[in-house]
Image (cartoon, rainbow, N blue to C red; front, side):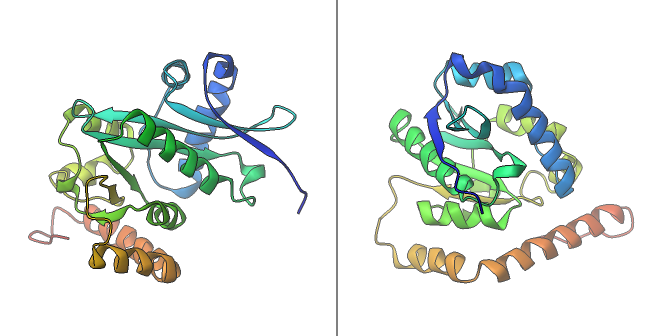
Length: 227
């Protein structure tokens, strides 16, 4: 593999020229995975850059390589690190992990008392979150801010989410609580499980996707089944 160096920076207005390629790749990646994400426009991404609430990865030659941004909900009580994307040609360099670490540090700097959460269908992202101190939680542990959930409307799985009364979907919820006890044995054991059994967890994610999509197709004839 070719040795490539990356610069991971807090994005600003000088990076707005990358906004369209970023949003295009977000959409292409979701389509390739067969899962949904809340669509974001170039203007929205540019706003995050201007606010200093995003990180961008570039090669030393200035080629765009990756991106992630911060969203705050519930008057800053909750923060989400959203839109993590890496350009296809740079997906074998451990760049996603580096970007996640930088956006996590930026979130802690800007919102030191906020809980940081994420929704994802990707086992690799879940493993990275676990390394940062996230634990899997139920959807009820996330923000109840309606503006956040409105962002799911453009996701192809929105119908499943609403059918479950916003309590479950194909995504897995994970949460970092800065006020949680650092030495909680159950939490630590759970994080170890994520690190050691990521392949098993990946299979569980795929099974969850299969079951929930199958149930959604036959919802008119099957009732009383919950996850």
